[in-house]
Length: 196
Image 1 (cartoon, one colour):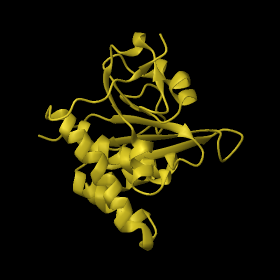
Image 2: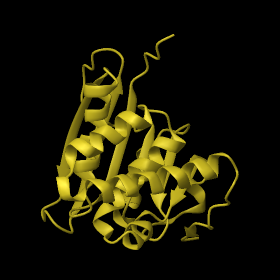
Image 3: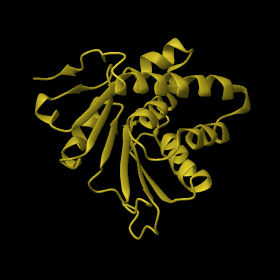
């Protein structure tokens, strides 16, 4: 049976992290390879690099009539500012995902389904923190089923320069393997950092 729900995803962080690119890749995977409908809208702060940035993605098996994400089902935070600004918009039954090293969450927000990963640290270990967005997409593919992992991987390959394809797939696989290990209970995630 086809899932007819619209899946509302908000990816947030700051300019230079590849937030918009991550949204593009997710939308591309849904439309080109999973044959679903998808919309992606983006929002930048006044500065293109270092300022607030977000990517709103909606995925559905049916036509999407309104392209904006007002109450995300999945919120991905890759900066403290993004977390503080957007966490209250997350649906009560929603999933909160964040970069462990960049976001200190509030215990009051832990009633959501939560996952966290040191995405930027993993990316730095792979050679450049610029791949943290791809690590996060790999992680997302393990903890939430939005599109098939292989289609998301194809969309990554379609979206990055030829010279970086191998490294980006390594980044994707690193995030996915970490997420899969958490889901299976094979590793215990390091404790998240809380403000209170």
